[in-house]
Image 1 (cartoon, one colour):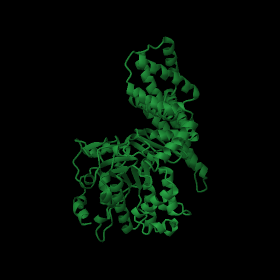
Image 2 (cartoon, helix red, strand yellow):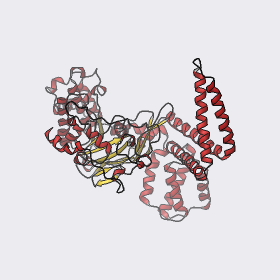
Image 3 (tube, helix red, strand yellow):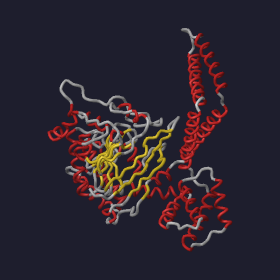
Image 4 (cartoon, one colour):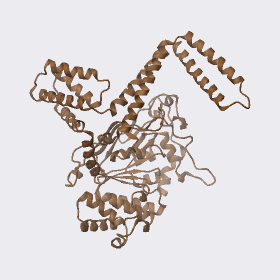
Length: 563
């Protein structure tokens, strides 16, 4: 493993549009992946492990999108030495997701947030109109109505009556809450501030997906030309041009991050300041896909995605039969990948496919080249999928629980195979799993995920022998090796939080017996344990009480050595 970053993730947020709401699956992840390492990502089902890695190859479901953040792929020195490498400059993989967003999803996002803004503004208007006297009258009226309705309930009472009572009780709670707010000026100010903050967030959501129309593109082309002349010749901007630019941005109800950068350069130009040439050139690179029509960008995207998937980043999925066509021979499926990505003829591709089958441990590969997947066992099919993934000589290999459906013996063979092939081809491995035994076997570093966040990461030794987050302790305590005859295995109480609602504080707090009051109020920052080890828990704050790791984890060293 080198210290060369190959993927850098910054403040990543991923949303999904469901029938009635928007779900936040990944929440503000910042993380680096290094060239040549094996990184294990662990956590319970639904923690966001697969969702995060799907963004690397633009494989999110159609109702999902990258809300904010960056995913930068940096070609390593080894990959730049390869003549077949397509991406030779850093690439922001988030742009691929933005271009591929369907218009129907964009319209849904815009509609949802505009409705939300309207509702929040109405709540502010209602709070400003209300008085304590009016609310007292409303409370009395609702209380009387509920009492009268409850008096009518008997064994024959209809379901409709029960629903009416519930609706009135909900309204009563709302009105009572309004009275509490209006009775205290400080609470009133805080309530208005919270509503305004929600409006700002909703407006930001609109900015992120809003696309520029052709009038905007024509104007920005002219604006960037003026900036370019100013940068090159220090040419003073005319007063009429300055007024035109100022009017344009003043009329913009919502601005995109790109427009905000343009406006920043405009301000520097109007004030006669020096524009940073490198930052401006970066802006011009961002302008390239923006200025083009959507159909041109999507056509260009098809080629880039083809080069990204397989040739740059390959994926091995949990069930090999989802990756293999049951009607085509395994050899043909490997050969087709080689021909498409490496431009070899049929004969050369066949020889390369047979060589790959031999490398992944398929005996008598020349004969078995013509077999269909149904004639292979589960372990052999997974070996074929590995051969397909390696056919393009990728720089990064994502293994999404590739051994879960296999028995223990075959599982060990597949893990050994991946390690051997990594040494030969020198690629980076991202291994998604919930099996900590596999982590101890294969990984250099480990990232623990919970509720859409990375809550602890470090080397394997850091996580197994010096873990600091209670969730990591709980995962380690669940290892079968800690089980004693006649006793139940440890299980983590409760369940993960719903990601439909905003998570306040530490999401693990309700399941954490070490939780403090602050865990329910404020989200903890990522504390540094050592230069290679970080954990997101208030227990690492100097003001927190000292809590020792669970007793059974003290014997972990002996258990792993004897396993």
